[in-house]
Image 1: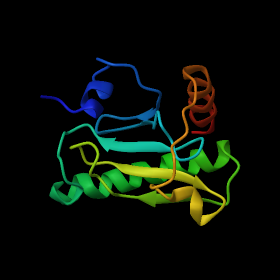
Image 2: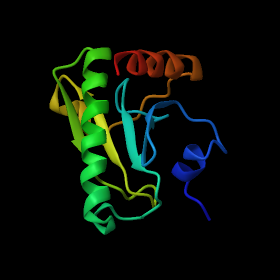
Image 3: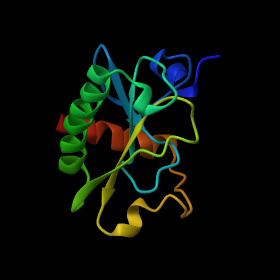
Length: 130
């Protein structure tokens, strides 16, 4: 069965996609730590990030860098934090989290619950910054 991320990539379920190429997709986390929290995934469904072949792993990070630069332009923050925790969905992914404090990337804190309209506005800002 396809992961929820594969279903977003394949447009089977809605997602706020901010960037995409032939190998990778970046979309907003619908329950973000902070506004602008993006997930970057390979289109090839592989559970564990370090099971990706070297070329895909390197490409994922280069693609994530492009997205991170756009997030920083679109969302006021000091830095873009990067996390690979990968326990919640069996599909390799990188979290890009706008940060002003270390607490902004604390995955144990309550998640935000933005409206679909708010997510759409944030996605538009990030896409415009690419």
